[in-house]
Length: 282
Image 1 (cartoon, helix red, strand yellow):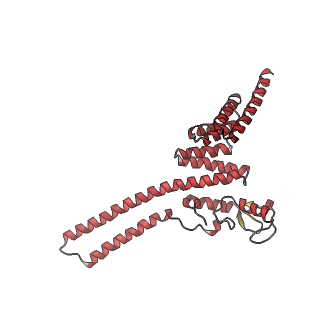
Image 2: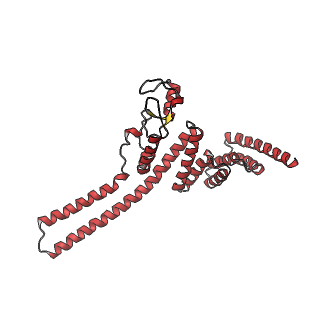
Image 3: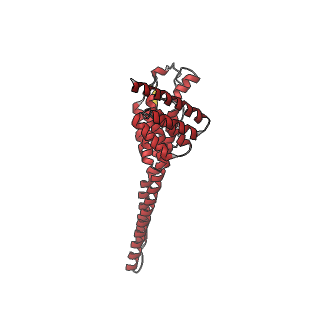
């Protein structure tokens, strides 16, 4: 009984300290907030929100190592913590650990959509995930481009060297030999242009884009009339404009919107192959 009473008192004191930390955070007194959350953690170390609150303070101070540490601890206590995965992703990106950072942000997005599909954090997480994916693609694309250019230069040099060797073995070069060499160089250009095509942004197919946002789908839902919209965009239309389908003008109840899993999978497959589409519009 005594142990239980002590634990209850510690939990209450920890909550008061959390509130103190929250008040300090609002006033941008991040050092004082960290101290308050640290005391709360000492009293009740198994409450994940204390860890994520302190991580947020560290993030404001750009102390990314401590952000990572606190977020990992919070995730051990609550694997579904959206904020912990989100801030962990940001911390890893700051350390240029792009692959792991993207994975953490993707988990945050998945958990966020499950908890509150239209919440502000879902949009915020998507923006950060898009930037991270695009940044990762830029680095890989630059590397591939350099490798392709180096290989092309080597191939051109080899063809020119062979051409010079052939010319040294004959007294004169024929028009046919010159044409053959030119065609080889053109063929080489075509091969390398084809190899570089995947890294060249093009237009995203219309069926993968929302008619309201004119951006690639993130969380597509289909209306009873068969039109697919971005969930947040169609809900905003219903709330601000009226309960009707903006395309067909038919009555539309938000409860009738159903996730379009086929389009969602198509978008995922497209983005996997064309990562640049995270940044470009439709």
